[in-house]
Structure formats: C-alpha cells, structure tokens
Length: 100
Image 1 (cartoon, rainbow, N blue to C red):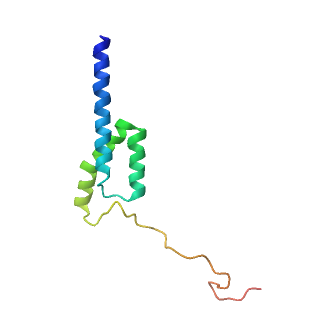
Image 2: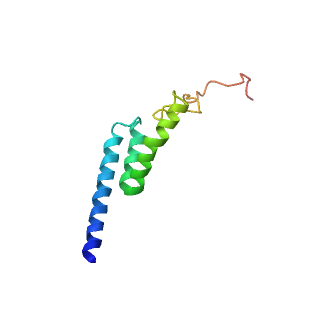
Image 3: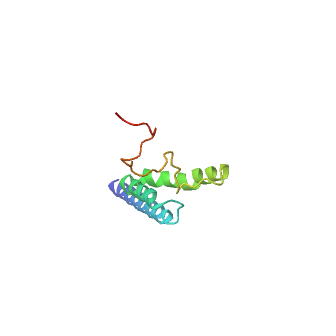
C-alpha cells in the first residue's frame, strides 16, 4: 500500500513540476510588461499548483475573451487616472492674488 502512495505522490509531483515549467515557459511570450511577469512568476513559484492553474485560466480563457470584447485592450499598459505633473514652484500662485 505504501508503494502505491509513493507512486501516486511521485506522479503528482512530476505533474506539478511539468505544469510549473509550462507556466513559466509560456509566461516568457505573454503580452505583459516586466513587473506583471514578475508577479506571475511569484504566484507560480509560491503557490505552485494554484498559481499555474490561474495562469492557464488567464492566458487561455480570460485574455482571449477580453481581447475579443475590446481589441484595443492591452494588459501591458495601465491607463493612469492622475495627470503627471512636476513639482510645485514656490514663486507661482494659482489665483494671482497678493498675499498679506
């Protein structure tokens, strides 16, 4: 009986390693920027089975469906809601009124 359990654990472990290897290999050609890839690598390595399955779902199910809905959608670019501004200048007043 212990031989059967050992065999099943070995097969499961090898399957998990193969799934992780596929996930990491597939991640190299994914349409993501570097930071997003890094987070996916952490997810795949820290939570091996779940991270790989979620990656499979994202790349095979979610990404094609979302891309079909909105062809201009690009996961590598995140739209910013805040305008980029420089540091405030001490000499410039917004309302041009003299201060007391």
